[in-house]
Structures are given as structure tokens and as C-alpha cells.
Length: 234
Ligand code: G3P
Ligand code: CA
Figure 1: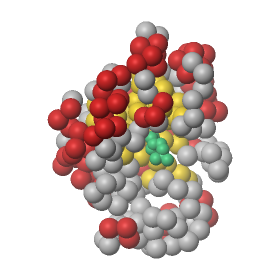
Figure 2: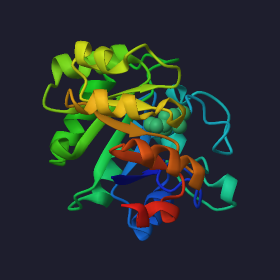
Figure 3: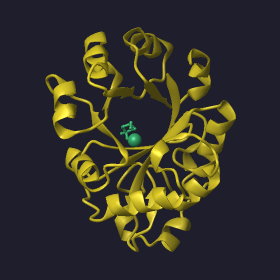
């Protein structure tokens, strides 16, 4: 089972900043999950929310800022640190040469970000990390786009309210992983999915009781804000 740092190591450092990814490396993660959005000038930036308000000292939509303007904000405020927003390019450059799983979550729910899939895949290709990457999204249309246009890349269907028989749903769409909230993990989900070659990668497993729950079912990957708590469970 792989231990994947959520937004870097979001329990210990400002989420989705390079400081957070450095922390995760220190803890010995098997990979990272992170969220991407597009700036006004089309740069892929790493940020969970469509707006900058919660995680920075700015106000507004990510899509309305140029990269230069986003770089003037501080995304380290929650930890009283200075931490600029990273681009996907900067993160991939920092992680170059490491065989980590890279789970790129594309946030296309509220803002459609036309072209974001092609841009992300192009950059993953440029860094030669396509085969170690998984693109996930709650917006399953985006996953269908990845499957259709970039079949070489692994995909994950995120969900936090359960489709009936999610393994059939994943199989019908052609996705190779399901990414359920841990509350939707159970032995039937894992065994039915595994028997069809579908992986189960679950989130956000932060507490020991949550880990016990998903361990019993035999998931493939857990995504956690606290990788340091669980690396011993591998
Ligand atoms: O990808 C797992 C998890 O990050 C999905 O939820 O809201 O934290 O992006 P959220
Ligand atoms: Ca996410």
C-alpha cells in the first residue's frame, strides 16, 4: 500500500506549496496528491480552491490573476510562513528523478478551464513522468477526456457520494482507479474492483481509526495530510 502526501504534507506545512512537498519527502512518502488550476495567462498552478482567499493573503479567483500577480501573494499564511504558489512546472522540476506517484487532481467543477487536460499531460510528458502519474477529478467528464485523448495515462474517479457498483461504473468509463472518500471503502468495493483490475486509492485518511478501516479492506493507496503517521504501515 502506498502512502501519498495530500497537498504535499498539508498537516505540517502550508498546503500545495513547495515547503509542503519538501516536508512530505522528509517523511518518506511514496508520492503526492495535489490540485491544479489555471491562471489568467494559462499557467498551471498548484492550488486547491478556485479562489485564493482561504489559503493566501489575497482575494479573488485564481483564473483572474496572472502568474506574476499570484506570485505576489503569500500562500503560507495558515502556518505564519512565507510560501509562494508553485506552478506545476516548478513542482515537477523539484521532484525530477524521483520515482514518486504523482496524483494530479484537476479541479474542473466550478471553473471549466478549457485545455487544462492537454496542458497537464504535455508537461507530465516533458518531464517523462507520465507512467508514474494518475490524473483524478470529481468532474468525471474530465476523466473521460483524459481516457479518450491520452489513454497512456492512469486515471482516478474521485467521489464522496457513492455510485451503485462503482467498479462497473469505472469499467464502463475505462478508468483504472476509483478514488473514494474513505467512508465508501469496504471489502466488497476492493475485491470487486481488484477482480476487474481497478485500483482503490482513498482519501483523506488522517486518523489511526480511519487507517484501520481502510487497511482491513486492502486498498492500494491512501492519501493523507499526515504521511509521517502511516509510513510504517506500508
Ligand atoms: O484527491 C483526494 C482529495 O484531495 C479530494 O478532495 O477536496 O481535498 O481535493 P479535496
Ligand atoms: Ca485534492
